[in-house]
Image (cartoon, rainbow, N blue to C red):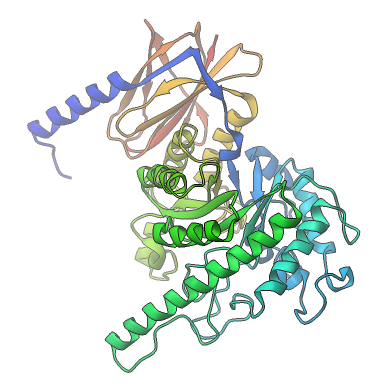
Amino acid sequence: MKVKTVAAVIVAAVCFASQAAQMTADFSKETGPVRRALHSSGFAPKVTSNGNITEQIRELNFEYTRTHDLALINAGQRVVDTHFIFPLMHLDAKDPRNYCFKPTDHLLKLSLDAGLKIFYRLGTSIEHSGPDVHFNSLIPEDFDKQAEVFAGTVRHYTRGWADGFNWDIRYWEIWNEPDGFNNMWCLPDGDGGKGATEAERRANRKVRDAKRRAMFVEFFVKCLKRIKSEFPELKVGGPAMCWFYKDYFRDMLKACKEAGVAPDFISWHYYGADPDTIIKWADDARKLCDSMGFPKCELIINEWHYLGSYSWKGLRNNDPKVLKEVWEGPASHNGIDSSCFTLTTLARMQTSEYDQSYFYGCRHSGAWGYMDEHRRKYKIWYALKLFGSIMKECPVMCASAGGGTVATLAAKSADGKSGWLLVSDYRGEADSLVLDVKGVRGVRSATLLDHERDNENTDAGFAGGKLTLKKKLPGSAAFLVKFDL
């Protein structure tokens, strides 16, 4: 074990003192409504009644569910994806007899009954079929036909067409991750570069990527114009990029402007371990949209999840040492670092440029779920439930500020009698956190989430307007403190 030098201890103490001085909460200052749409996910009820998880979904209090990948977690069901809803592309897209809506009708009804709003992704779920073999993720042969099928799907769920519904599904996303590689927007012979040498393959890959991008931009604009022409009141956009791909978005927005059509939102994803990057991307996107003449364009990050130092290769590795890193300890995929990364990000999003965010989550068990195959809940479950409880009970935001590794979120209950303060320390080294708290009469209760505790009651010292929260373990930890107002 390494022993800290005296200098290191002094530096840590100074940093902590500075951090503590910055951390405040003032429940006498309301800053606006809590933005519930920032607490959304891909989690939704499943078609199967075997081990029903609807009540678990309710407990998390998400605002929206995004339909992407729902076909992958409903085995054997023909749901959501366009190739399931309209399987034979040579048929007439205006004839309701050529659509298969009933399985998706049932699934969406389960989600609505669970209290979730629907964010519908048009297109296909991701397809990991390899570099050269693709079925559902091939670039469509007929863009006009695909746009007409999309319009038929929107019409069924919002205008009652084809024995459909007049549901309030406002958000419709065109495709998912077209900038992905060999899994979402694929050329017939694969997206990889061809050639005898590595240099030739790189050059050919660059040409192919440019071709794929140009084709998608054309496709996006065509679908956007078609859907907005019939449904101007709905929100239509996309395309859920793998990351905030600024140049790609610029090409897409430029083409929209030239075509005289405006996307209602743009969307992208993030997998990593840095909340600062997530927030910065929203700032960058706002500047981009504004500069290109789309000041009303909403910003949506609709897949994001902690991805530690093991990265994607580690997550898909079978080496016992790597598996231990991925699934055990504080820095594991759904452990306490992941949980505090999530809570920190959710708290900071409330004052960000984002309009919606969707934690990923889609499968209920496994890497992207909240429990293992034996239905034992991961640490991330307790983080999402903790934040969901704030979203459910507290509609009004109050002033607060974190500092250093600490993020805060202060909110009032609907009756104005209690104040809730989330304090999330993501990988911080301080053993206690001190905050100046105003506008409260006293502490009602405190909850702790750390590597060994799952939202357990804990002590919170409060005297002279100062709240002191002591960790029981080093590293990441989160507290939810409730005050009497």
